[in-house]
Image (cartoon, rainbow, N blue to C red):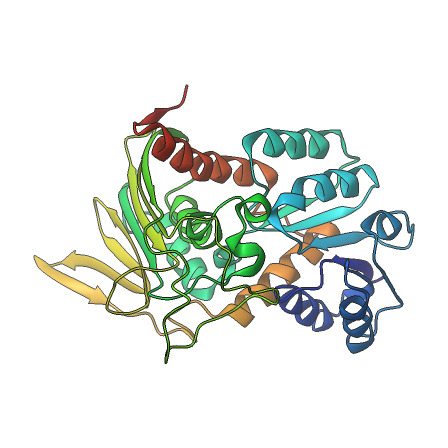
Length: 354
């Protein structure tokens, strides 16, 4: 099969991970780049040898040469572009989160169903980390038994990126939808993807973007504006599933915490595991508890390697060589959890699902 021709929609910072990974995949060709900013679109196209660049994604989707697209735009445009791409007979890789609302999620799901067998892969990149894939094999073979509890924490002391990340209209939320989506999906995926039963969540807007803080650097979006912020500082939640399992999560852009940290753990009736900050498997043998450290290249999530594996998987799925492990149905269930936390916080009560 010839190389698939790919269009990149959105040339912001995350697009670099897609572009680099496509460049390294022999089965793909970077054919076009689209961005509202012409200078950014043209420079990315030149850097990666794309045949063309455009500023209107409709123009990109109308090109019959393009087989697939990566959607790397603001969250509030994911749904409209994904639906349009599927209707234009393109395969789609959409960055996380799938979209902003459940209504949009159902629209995308419907478009996938109506498409001519096109792939839509949700960008849950942590599924492709070596630590995740190794642990999943242990779980799938029953070494941890029934996974009944997981907890995930992704804390930034000072880390509101500003720009569109801090604009709820474009992002849909703050650290929950930006960081929480990763760790929630990671736990849920490893737990066997149980159906959500209820959610009790809280969000807080106490500190703002703390633009007064000096002497500590942090990532800033390309359109960073220290004076604008409409998203939460932090969020926490208890998510219950129909199989009786539960997930506890907390995430922050800014918090009076000692240091930045990421901790993700799962617990089963035969063993447990810590996947972040480093993969450890906990079990027992001969009446002794054992902490097992696998000998693998990276015990923590390697961002570059994860994206490469994600893009490689997408290309392989487009070619019909593999089954999509991150389909629209998964994106929809994760959106149910994200929007459920926000709804629970706004209501001040637990949200239940039928």
